[in-house]
Length: 345
Image 1 (cartoon, rainbow, N blue to C red):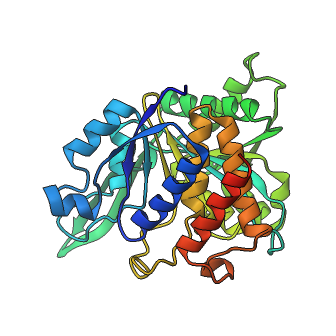
Image 2: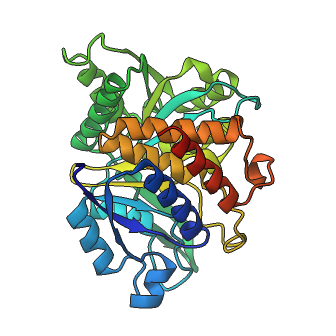
């Protein structure tokens, strides 16, 4: 008998509950052994407790150390900070894993299979910003401070290198801007080059370094030259969306936020309130995030079956939601997916 795995479930806002339900149906068909603790966050958290991340939700993740969440909307006004940023900080989720894999062939780019590993806590996203008043203009000067630490760079690069080896990747590209930001990203570059010289990594994969603007250009011209991209927070945010565009957009983009003591899996896209409740949302990104979650829990067979069922549903059965050129609603897509999973049992 499989041991139950406690996990926190956050349906989220907008289309979140709809795509979470689709993912739960797939997990049920796979007989994935998750024991869910359902919690509220985002706008629902503000409504129930005045906080987008209620204490009960944070306590649940501290206990389970594992979460699947739908998109969260940060309320306008009221001084609320991004719930996603708060979760990363609260649980020190230092690595953001964003795979980009072609699921539906025949697009502008085909046969894409690469991974962006983004630092999640440091850099220019630490939020140290302020204005400087000059004369009667309180916003005459805007200033931001970026901070990278040796420890933060090391743990992120170590995670990227270990992931590359564990998944059989052949090349890691260390993306930086050390030609201009010689200290801020120079530290990242220096740490990566030094780490690669260790016997556990040297020669296990090819390491190349690339300036971020050149990397962006080459991703558009020839993305097939890349395998794993590892970079700092701001560059990772930009490049991970760029590579999502290579495989069809954010609707096909799963994300994993990995820390020492917790991991949170999510669809990268937003809550799409304009289509919430219409039953037309595409759950593929969250389903693929569910496959990452299964991998994380070492349920590799179930992760493989889920990915194959998604592929077969989209490409053999041709059951696709409207954003992918099909006519299926969320329920019809989920039904076809579950049938694929059941047929493989």
